[in-house]
Length: 98
Ligand SMILES: [Zn+2]
Image 1 (spheres, rainbow, N blue to C red):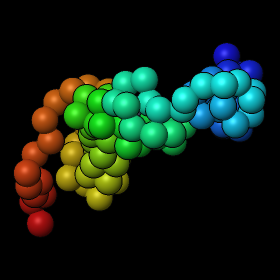
Image 2 (spheres, rainbow, N blue to C red):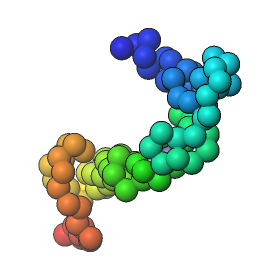
Image 3 (spheres, rainbow, N blue to C red):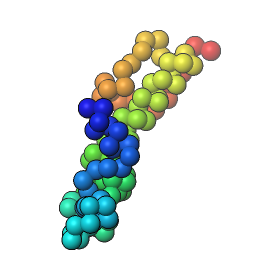
């Protein structure tokens, strides 16, 4: 597990761009999911059109939800802690008694 995380951190992931540039294979490095040029780790994590509406959006929403709950709890707008992985909708407006 740790080795996998370090590999990802170093960008050593078997993407098509990695295969073409680093491993020097004779491969066209278009994305296997969306067909755009340069299937890199960055492309897969943040800009692949195939993943934008699903995986990337869900990860974004999870991160935003974690920040929302942490800030709301810290400034006293939530009495109890809500775990970020709980898939509840966030309130449009939170108010306290002040
Ligand atoms: Zn793609």
